[in-house]
Length: 348
Image (cartoon, rainbow, N blue to C red):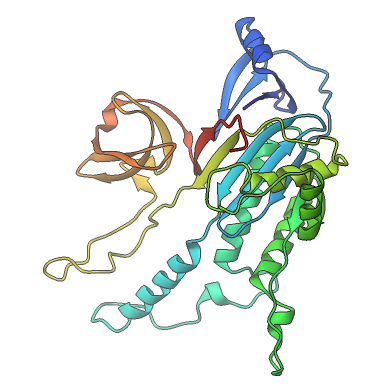
């Protein structure tokens, strides 16, 4: 990050400082190091006046990747590109099929009854829709803990409706996207002032500033998604800046956990269906960030025969499947996502 977040002695977020100022505070013993799920910040040990400037978060929702920009009037504090949650619907479908298949096998099962997860409620949201929009809300809450955010600006995406001459015209008034974003806006207003920007307005502002948007939507490039989130946050300050001075990004990817299942879907030799999935590994929560004696900074995955599986924090690639739990030096926190800092000095 170009600037280091600062938290007061009481836990109140203050204005971020320059890295040189951060080092000076640490050397003089006036601050201590802190870390929060991929963001390094410092906490002051003395009382401060708590003066803050307006800080806005620009949010560019997407189907595969999403952009977030934290910005003041003259400085870009942080750019985040996050992978969207797209796997929940397939998980729910597999769970439903496994539950139904068990009823036709010669195994004890409960009597069929109305599925409580499908009860019609006025405030119910589909699991896949809620998981997708809840990730955006979690990121906003995460940022608000270390930065004094005053407002949120979101690009108000619209659902593509299908015109039909039939009597059933539900698609023109209902969509999971509409339900999800309404829920997100209602909860986001509890964190701070919320403003909506239409897609065509974002495009107009981007063309006015002379910025281009890359067509490679899945690339880890500032001009794929973060350019729109930067334009949105800059719109809040009446387009005060003409070009983003900070193109560095924090790449975030939510960690997928194998939740507990009754047994494996496919039986092994002899027709045995072994237990599968859990959120715990040898007493440790999966996704726990640790410092291992041999494999250094990693997070915990599965386990097998009394050994832990460790994964890389940046890529999620499995480092080993035979780590000794006794070699864990320090336990930090539970990670909800993987993170990787990508510096970028040019628009290429």
